[in-house]
Length: 491
Image (tube, rainbow, N blue to C red; front, side, top):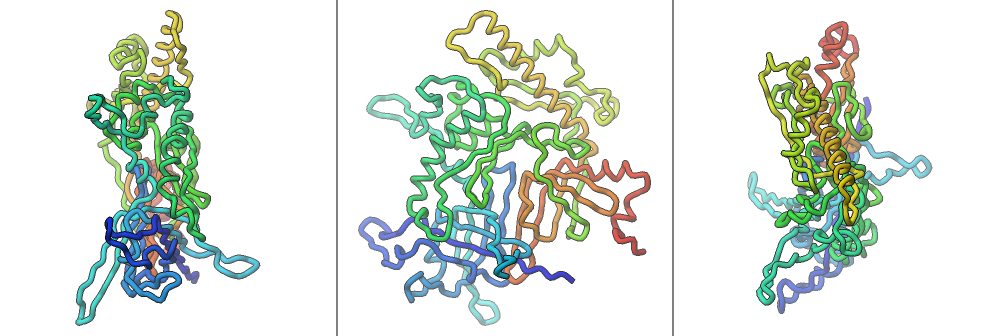
């Protein structure tokens, strides 16, 4: 029997050296005497390290429990509770794996892979009496670095002297083109300017002290992987304020149905991933974008499975409304569509959306991105305006066809939760290939939660959607029930 030995490593990286508790109230020297601290030995038996992340949320979360047994300040003999060492906005580096790899030459355990780098949001200390004995716990909760995209906000301040409204920090968004001339830009160029001009400078100011930590990576950079198709209009950007940076980007980049935007932790640092949503078809292949990284799940790895099918996402009339974008409005798109073929957005006779069985059901989403090849000259001639209108019309038709193609088979696709033996390699945004007996099906992992109990279990829960399990079993010549409950052929 194979025995697994989950390995966990948690490291605290201080964000600043506290010398005062408030102006004129000096703090003890021990608070400013260290840069980082290995917290692994303080993880409590019976507690848990919980890390959760979803491609549908701006930031992942973590929750840890430590024993309140007294921590040594590095280089000092003083003891104190971890509650006194950890502050909000300190950095935690969380690493773990189900079965540690050993170095072939040295025979030593290799450091577990990074799972999340996070910012502390809350520190809590609980003390109570159980069975006549005191029990103490320190809990630490926080978010990954996607929180930075929520902290940076776009808002106006009233200048009482001038009597004008000014953009507090991000005037970049009103004139985000270099040279100060607002113009339409490809999504990649726009997003890179946001990262390089806004996010990275913020990180560098934010992590001045933590960059000095000896054994941890300095978080003062953020990479970018952007494969989103389309262009951003300055009209869209200038109309949005009183929101977080994430909300602005999610709005103008069509994050939701069409695209995804999330921060991913990697061994070499942080990466902002912006990509087309890998909408899996009934065959498990994406309808747009590249094939996401695939992880195979065998029957013996499944602890529990709960999936369902529903008509909640069923529709047979599809529409993509266009927010005011240059010269084309939704009303214009409706008029142009009325003279063309309705087969791209009205599926009253399609097998899984037949109107005679399900009635007429409408699905509508909004798009704020424009075509990737849309030009923006200083002065447009009449023929250029007509050509641009055709580009916008073709772009919206393409997105509407994708909406219909991706949702026409919702009736036979599954969603639910897979509870698995711990697997640190599973991340949100991956495709899972689930093999049960003779049937192999594909699922899209929307959210992943890892729970590691020190000296105990390591479990992984995955929220999945667009699963092809029902489709795969229905295409088998013989029913798949026997092979599912008896995969080794033992009666």
